[in-house]
Length: 534
Image 1 (cartoon, rainbow, N blue to C red):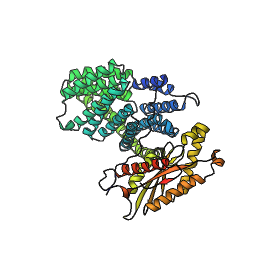
Image 2 (cartoon, rainbow, N blue to C red; image 1 turned 90 degrees about the vertical axis):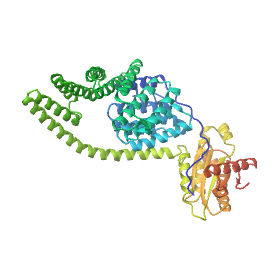
Image 3 (cartoon, helix red, strand yellow; image 1 turned 120 degrees about the vertical axis):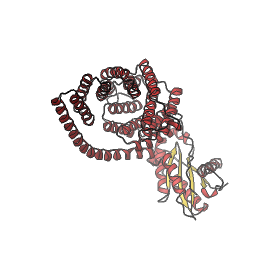
Image 4 (cartoon, rainbow, N blue to C red; image 1 turned 135 degrees about the horizontal axis):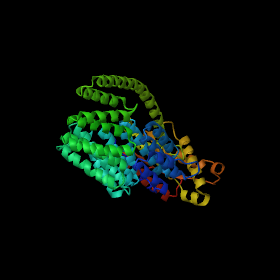
């Protein structure tokens, strides 16, 4: 029998991040493409802001660098924000760093890794009923699915994200960004010849109309960057229809907006699209001017696109009878292609180095995701993975025991001695349980004063004896020396997988409920004991 489903106790719901006025200003800057302003606004000195706000601002700082075209630097900054917030109480703030990591991974074309992180972010957000974070996770997931060609799944994810945003987000920009990404996904599916949702895809007329309507909505909400991009996409769809004069007008409009927002590569590409449209209707002179302006705007960037533009320009100049100019343009195309090939070789080396760094940074994410910050023990997520893994690797004569350990009267410890002493008690208990168990046993903290031990054994008696050894070690620990407290005890309940009936659909859940019921019995019987039956 294979085990897959996991049940751990319902996590304590964490309060949502309440954005400060400063955070809201940064969100608006990022939404409107004011990248330099966002970089300045997210810079702060140590001690200037509270830790939670600092984590969010560092995450926004990372996003600004990604938008600026420096995704690896953004990845480093987001990782730093995540690593500096290990405490469980800061998990919702750390989620902002996770979303910056997602954005960076997508900008670095690490879409498979981005999807894994998006799934984790969505689960965390659902566990804590953070619906807007769920929507943001689904939006990121949909983008990567679209890029990887999984169009139906991408569109379904993005549609679900939009519905959640509309119901729960106070930020219209986040709703419109999701709508923009959905239209991009539909456009990508059309270009691949995919039937969206198994139905006939929209034609270019419908797509142009949808892009135009979206551009109006983005402009009405002050989102200049989205408006400029949408106008350009509407023009491209219109051009596919053969309405070239209208497309030229729309492309000019898109260029004006893109240029005003300093979207260099986008506005250069739009100029070249204007050149191609002029050539399509036979206006060679206007086409030549547009290509020349586009090439000038590209500068030394995007050598592949520059080479394509030079070749198109050479053909136009040859058709206009300017052979010398055509030869010059062709030589420039060869030079740009050489730059592209040289850059491609350097890029391959850089990509290899980049992957090494991403792997190094990812190791930090995994450690944080699976480690309890207070005690250093594995956390709930690590427990959920280990119990399924262990159940699936038991020998025929082995049993798996789940022991739930709970500190007795822990609230009294916090009330009488303070939370700092309470934290010392939990750290000491973690060390005591680890020392009292065998190599190969698995000890984790689920949260609060609740710990679990997974024991591979050969029957109920052995499981009970090992649990009693652990509880006895807690009782015998010198609490006064280590925590300035007279005594601490703990109670435990034990449940074996072999006690669960074969018809039970979720063995892991049933094991937990059994051990938890016995833990409750141990508390009722006077605490400081193990209950392994009944």
